[in-house]
Structure formats: structure tokens, C-alpha cells
Amino acid sequence: MENIKAQKLLNKIQRDLMRNGIITNTIVEDLKELRKFVVEENIPLLAKVTRLTYEHIGEHEDFLIAIPDDEPIEAGEDVEEAEETEIAENEPITGQESLEYMLSLMAEHDNKVNELELREYVNALKEHAGEDY
Image (cartoon, rainbow, N blue to C red; front, side, top):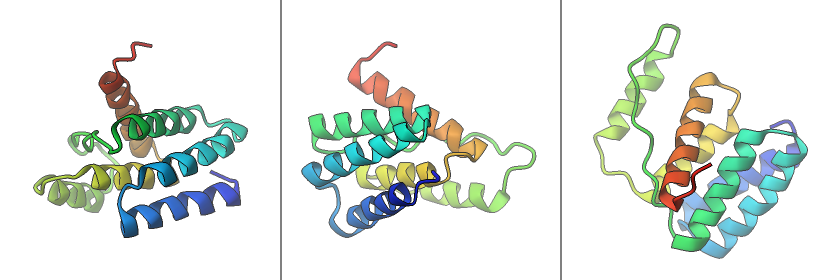
């Protein structure tokens, strides 16, 4: 995201989530605002994942999507990142942790690995909602 306001809002959402957990009204409103910036910047993947996320949280008052399964390391991937993910996979994951992870992917959405994982979140959110498009 190029827009400074969008970056600041994403940082605010991440801070609020870490400090207070998932507060449905606040996070839904912040994600709706963030989506406006993302649409303006013409980033369809972020627009979709943001919309599906705030709809999901609004309906369930929680984030019920797990962190996507890790794939084997491909040539050129950072080994340290893969090791950190493996460590995280051995611990139980809460909805808040998964949402925090998804937001961190959004911050660097142009990274190919992050883009793939965001697409997995989109698919999981759509599957959970029963959407077929």
C-alpha cells in the first residue's frame, strides 16, 4: 500500500488487535475504512480479503479462520521465515493470532509468498461463508 493513511490505519488495527483482542465494532469499522483506501489504490486482492474479513468478524464476532498450512520451502524463499512459521505451527493458534498474521501479510502484500497466503485466506473465508464465486 502506497497511501500513508492506509498504512497508518493498518498499523492502528494491528496495535488495537494486539492490545485489546478482537473488538467487533471497532475492527469492522476500521477494516471498512481500510478497504476504501485499498480500492482507491486498485489492489483487488486486499479489497477482497478486507471485505470478507470484516463480514466474517461481523457475523461471528471472532475470526474463525486458521493460519494457512505451510508449504515446503521453494528455491529462493527465506529459510528463517519458514523456521518461524514452523515454530508457530506447533502451538495452538487462536483467531486473534491468525488475524494478526493475515494483517501482517497485508502490510507486505506484494511479496509473492504473502500474496499466495492471502489468496488462501480469501478461499478459506469464502468457504466458511459458503460463497461460491
